[in-house]
Length: 333
Picture 1 (cartoon, rainbow, N blue to C red):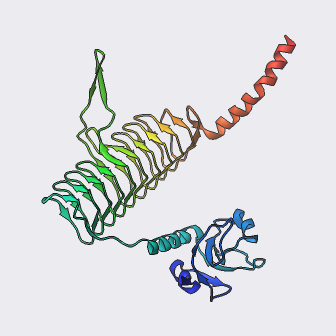
Picture 2: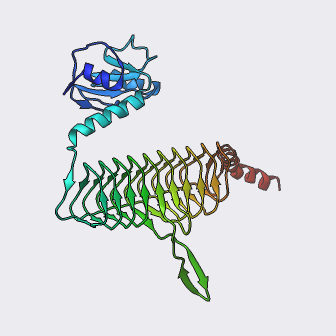
Picture 3: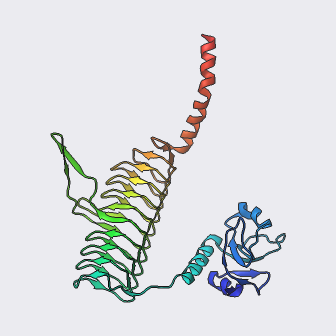
């Protein structure tokens, strides 16, 4: 348990109300719990505060609390501040692991840094380099010449092939495969031939990758995932794909080989992108879209095939009128 004063220091906020409250943890804004702290993302969630049981609410500096009988902490950005609180409370629940399990196998030619944790049945091949403060959980495999940067966490049963480079403070969740061959095939006389892939994968700093994702190595050049990009679960990244910085990809997205995704792109769930096209910076691809051609920066597209969302909405409005128009035409003929 922590005093409200301690909590306010973590998020650099100003307390308005009872400064003696003791906080047990964090809770949601819809229901809340007595003795816990929540946050108000924006004004549309304000209605929940009337019956919310939370003892403290993190709000924007401009929040009007004149009609609210509740202690608040005012901050510049409630969402970012609450991320700090979630990280703080989560870190208190997790005992930091260090040490190398006796059932792991580490090549004598591998380099392992300080304060690392290597779990049971982890295999680290020769010339791999594991930096300081890395956590590798049980059952994971690290291939030859692979580099894993400081403070990166590899969760259970992750497979990282040879010659892969992973940056600092990355997180790769259970079951993900990084660096397998891409789906490159040549067909001749009815027989399919696999193309060997001699490129690799480069994952830059602060990237998060969900569970059961597949990230293929490049054919000649590297597959690249840029800094601070976040991948959900069950995502397929094809060979030679280049994803920019600060992107967000939701579950079941598939990106075919050699496509280029710009910076700060958002791709919603179950969307597909064909090979050898580009998605411009700051674009949004709506859920279950299929992108068949290059789209410029700042686009918002949807549908199959994906097109500008506003145009699609107009087309759908017209389509809804077609039965009525058909009846009119049939009646007049």
